[in-house]
Length: 237
Ligand code: BV8
View (tube, rainbow, N blue to C red):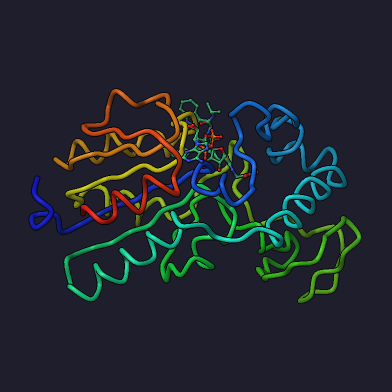
C-alpha cells in the first residue's frame, strides 16, 4: 500500500516506547512484573486487601516518571500527528497502554490512555478525578469531598474494563494502517487489536525490540530500539 493511499491510521504503543526514557517495561528481563507480583499490586482485589502497598507501588512509579523525559520515538509520533492533520490525510489515533505522560510531553495532542494515567487519581466516594504529582496514601483526603480512604490511582487493573474501547474499535474498523510499537502482545484486549485491523483490511506493522506474542499476525515487522525504528518508519509513511 503506497503512502499516498493511507488515510486512517491507528497506532498502539506499549512500555517499549518509554524504555529508553528510563521507565521499566513489564515482561523483559528485570522488568516490573519480574520484581513485583501483579496479582498483589495491579488488581482491584489487591487494592482492597492492601491499599498501603498498592499506593506505595504507584507512588514510586510516579516519582520515576517525574524524573523521566520523552525520547525521539515519542517526538516522531507527535510530528507525524501534526503532519497528518496539516495535510488532512485522514484519521490519526494514538492509543497507548502506558500510564506515563511521555507522549503528551513529547508533543502529542491527542493520546487515548486505554489503561489510565499515573498522574491522575479518583475518589471512590464521590467519583472526583484529578491530576496530581504528590504521593497518595489511604489517609490522603479527597480534594473534592474531603473524605479519606477512597482515593485510588486512575489506572486500569487486571480484570477491569479498559478505557475508550468504543472509540478504539470504531477507528480499527476504519483504519488503513495499524502500527504496534514496543508492546509484547500479551495483554488483552490490546493484543487483539491487530486482528481487528486486519479484518478491516488494514496493513499492519510491528515495531519492537523483538517479536512479541502475536508477531506472526503482522504484515510487516521491524526490530530494534524505538528511538531508531520509529523516526525512520515515520519518515517513510
Ligand atoms: C479486561 C496498567 C474485561 C496498570 C495494565 C483474553 C485472553 C487471556 C486473558 C485475558 C483475555 N481477556 C482479558 C484477559 C485478562 C487480562 C489479560 O490480558 N491478562 C494477560 C496477562 C493474559 N486482561 C485484562 O484484565 C484487561 N481487562 O480484560 O477487562 C474486558 C475487556 C474488554 C472486553 C470485555 C471484558 C485489563 C488489562 C490492563 C491491565 N493494566 N497496565 C499498570 O501499569 O500498573 S497492563 C500492562 O501490561 C501495560 O499497561 C500493558 O498493557 C501490558 C503489556 O505490557 P507492554 O506494554 O506490552 O510491555 P511488556 O513489558 O509486556 O513488553 C514490552 C515490549 O517492548 C517487549 O516486547 C520488548 O521487546 C519491547 N521493548 C523493550 N525495550 C524496547 C522495546 N521496543 C522498542 N524499543 C525498546 N527500547
